[in-house]
Length: 281
Length: 182
Image (cartoon, rainbow over the protein chains, first blue to last red):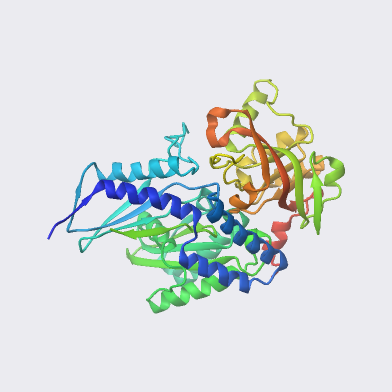
């Protein structure tokens, strides 16, 4: 059975998610944050985490965005193959949602029309949209506005198969150490291993939207996530990069088959807010 | 150590600031980020003056979100300072004394800090709502066409920041990276 979905509904949902993601922490991030407050060993680290908790309270109560960099809008659309869209083009509908969300929601317009000419579009469009077709008749929207303090510290490494697991760990720890205070720690680290050049990057970005409290179902990946989190925290970067025992809230790793000649590793770094909102229509 | 300071942050003030100090700043400061710095340096390159009073100036690297009605400014946390590294030494040599941002700086900037007895402070990245509440007034100085990247003059009260690089070039981030606080 074909199910019809109006693209106006997509616009309205995206508009609401712009506000939601920029003013409230997702539940998984909230749990991770509270855990971090209990774990942090350094005095300055605890002080920073307390400031960030206070910041979240003010953001929700006074309707001030958690961070002034309200991000470039990244949208994952998982579209059931039995869905038929009615109305304007889906891409236009998503961008209209972003336009309304950012303009009506007092969010910063941080997008320039051309990477070299750099003229602001003044409505934060266009979004970066990733489409995938999945079984079923639902549409899952994941809205993850990405700030560029952390995005700029993200890396891709085209490793050799012989670099193996040690090479992967070295790549992740190198990217995180280089990011340090720039990425607004405690960070969330999204890692994509496998695929090809762009697949690895998308896997890493998607990994950031995974529940930070859940580990991979693949046993060796679960172990890798735990070990990397421990080693990232041992770097001593700490909250705000000012030193401490909580440098990251989670390391989420996603994998995909790859070529016999390659071992791509992408490391997408996110700040302590790691904004993501999810809705299913 | 917690210290209350007021602007202008002059050499007499920076002499009393040491890396790791937690300061609460009251007074006025400029707000400028990438595009505004680029324009200011272009103006200097053409032999024109700067649109701001650079002597003993404090520049906060920031681009706010829009203000709601009745508020002076929107969310107002620091942006990554390294993107201003290309411009900062010139402005420090012209008299700027304090920079507020987040993240690492280049050796050229650290050298310029030491040469001019200046200071680099970090505000907490991602605390834009909290820092917004410390800003009591905001006015446009120039480059309004740049939107969120325009140059502003703001008045702050008890604005929290941490001394990351002091006038002698001591660097708190480097000590954190060496695991001194683990």
